[in-house]
Image (cartoon, rainbow, N blue to C red):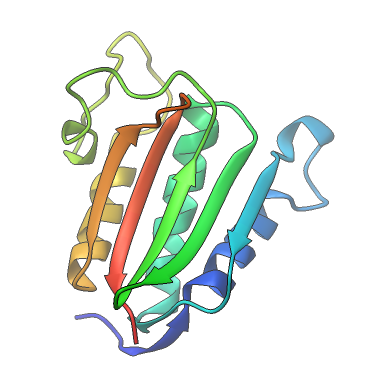
Length: 152
């Protein structure tokens, strides 16, 4: 069951980006995160769960991509959108849907870099909120993961 109350995705994204830039981290561990939003993007949902989705997407962007990471929040045609984009190598061809499968790793030679559950959990949360999530390699390079939710 998902708690339902008005949530501003801009505020959620801004808070999660701030957590990634915490002063307690060393300079190398304070990644460059930029949040772009034209205004509020209100949805009905659980702010903690939606924060977890953004946290998972940021973590993946820094784990598998390179900074700067850009979080873009927008609202259009009754949908609120959050896109997290890095400038890394992007996704291996054919893995765009598989990255949301439990325990899937695009590069099986990597070990010790998580359990392969983060994006599966993110997808479950987004779907429980009536939304969609998709991953792609951006035209300019890097990975782009986009969630869309019904806007208030």
